[in-house]
Figure 1 (cartoon, rainbow, N blue to C red):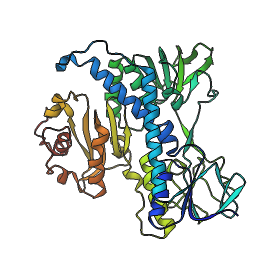
Figure 2 (tube, helix red, strand yellow):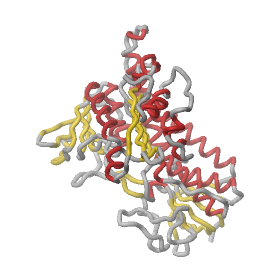
Figure 3 (cartoon, one colour):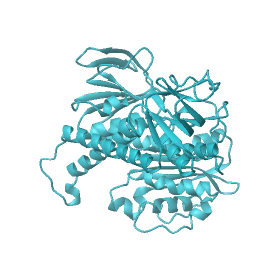
Figure 4 (tube, helix red, strand yellow):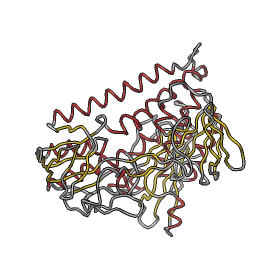
Length: 456
């Protein structure tokens, strides 16, 4: 037996590194097992690189369309190699920051791939580390579509963000958050983009009204959008990828598969450690993230709920506190905000209007276009809206949806209101600074009762 630790975290992504830091803060001797870089996939290959690339797309578009704002530019062009270098530097900086936080909190980094032993300890290579508690935080892996494998010109989301050269054309299969972000970035880079979704709307997890706004803007930007169309007959010719969708033939320099993901459990040895899984392969946990093996916890993409980094972080804190025997508060899966950083952004929490109807709720809706408030015109943010879904019994906000240039920053106010059990009545009386886009939240709450002062 090698060293022993009070808590060992397998996986150093957002959930894992936060769990390790919290365990160490609680006085526990803690280790993280990570085979790659601190920060895991999200920081090095997914969320952070994607948002870095999207920020450049935003700046590029602003520079090219700034004349109406009184700023004339000439010779604006994208430097693909410089962008790639910045993407790598951002991830490297943040990865180094995670490692520094581990060191500052005296968390030991064990490099390698971790698995569970039969008695719930952790094996890394030929070494076995004794653990008082183990937190599984290995995240998820990309899934190809049936009959297709990744390789060559058929790439996953990281493959899309790390192409050596800017492609002339791409086809993106899957119009959820990741696929929509890729499409949104590349069309602004100047690439010809086709976005294909098997279900009947893009952004299938979002309120249909939000999806309609985004689809309309996407088409205006030049993206070819096809919904209700599975992709079939995929052929990588070496120079391009050919495929069919919805009775049409398609061809692109690259085919990006941005569909499903599966929990990354292959190396964990769950069965031997008596850690039970659900039918969908996710690990079964209780409200404190504890598995069927009482010394093993699991968080993030490995367990129920949306596969989001901020969810994993909060679950990591709950798992660490539970493992340490400290007071904690379970994550409310119904109050985890969704955030998609395409243009325009989409953010939401709680029920869509369709889900409220399906549940049989007696509900009403408050809605206000961003263009109705002064800041919408000042900051050229007029395409979207704020939409609130209200249970009429007590005025409870059961769903909130925002489309706009800064929707992902704005959603926190609605999450906080719902978490603190505030109703739309309180929201309608909270003073918002002027002129800000957030004033649309105020008037959307007032619109529930028909007295929004800026309603068109």
